[in-house]
Amino acid sequence: MKTILKQIRNEWRSNLFLFVELLLVFTVLWYIVDWTVVTARVYNAPMGFDIDHCYNIDLGKYTPKAAAYNPALTSENDMEDLLQIVDRLKHRPGVEAVALSQNCYPYNEGSNGVRIAVDTVLLQARYFIIEPDFFRVFRFQSADGTGPDKLVEAVRRKEIVTTSNLTDDYPELGLADANALLGREVPYWDADAPVRHRIGAIAEPTRWSHFYTSHEYGGAFITTTLDMDLLKEYGDARYITLSLRVSEDEDHDFIDRLMDDADRLYQVGNLYLLNTTSFKDLREISELEDMNEVKTQLCVLGFLLMNIFLGVIGTFWFRTQHRRGEVALRMAMGSSRNAIFLHLMTEGVLLLTLATIPAIVIAFNIGIAELVDVAKMHFTTDRFLLGIFFTWLLMAVMIIAGIWYPASRAMKVQPAEALHDE
Image 1 (tube, helix red, strand yellow):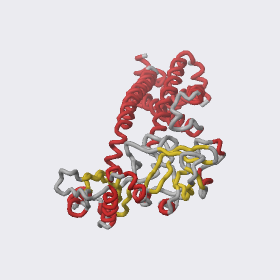
Image 2 (image 1 turned 45 degrees about the vertical axis):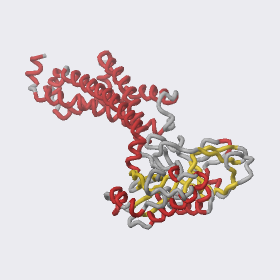
Image 3 (image 1 turned 180 degrees about the vertical axis):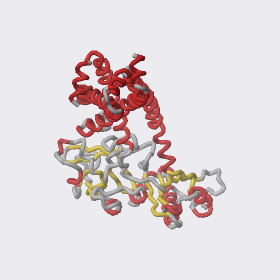
Image 4 (image 1 turned 180 degrees about the horizontal axis):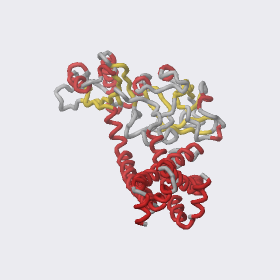
């Protein structure tokens, strides 16, 4: 090692350009790696719910022009008929859970917002207007990891369910998380509201999509129980969403089989099943724009990465080929091929390591200045070190690839022939 360091120091003029190149490339590559790591970690983080084997059902209502239309039925009758459809679906073979909700199912295009008051502080979150089994359909988890049962029971008691990260953006409360609010009675919308509701359960945070974190909108929610009185206020069953979960064994051609039975089993009063959509399809539609944007960014970064890869390999390829005479001389002086090969590899990796030291300083200042994405993930020590490690590993692979082949060819040439060419 001392010999290699001494050689690098003695050849500092020829190594200076290489050192600067490695420094700049390392910094640029670290930025690419950091973005990729953040995007991958956000995408693969827990969603807080599960949409596998779940379906969304759109309801239709006959118009006066339809032969099956009954003009005697009121909006209140429609809501009673809606509950009858739900009951029939609950008894369908293979259906595990069915629930009604209003504008709050996963991967919905819209949403509602609500505020509750804790002391004098108004906490804002996404508004879930749901039936109790909504948490079973999408398998939301209680903050203590015991599944959805506590959440379901709280909604049945017409208590509030909220997420553990509800208080994260309100440091003035002095609370580590929302678990401290369990059992507390709070008003909706205004601190002076006369009616208060008890917080009966705390759920794990959720996410709006795979491209949002639980700290962004949609990560925290507050519930209200969707009962008959509230259904009557909406007045139209088409404003209500019907969602269900089927067992894994029954999740084959489920949509076709359900719609085949729709007219016979699930047409009640003026209501009927209009359409059934898998939540996997809803997720794809909801995330299409973000997915296309990420794919575009990955293509651009992939192009830059390819140029970096070819540039680093080409530099060390040319450098190693240019040292054929040195390789031949070492072989003539009795050095083994393995020793020469190890010497060249170690020299390349050592140059990279030396260039990494100032590159780390530059990268750290870029992170501290928040020139990287800090909205999705805080710039932490773990994030920084992980990016440095993967960047160094990628560049080490490039350098080894750039040295290995020309070095192997140089060592196959007879020393006398190589020295004669020189």
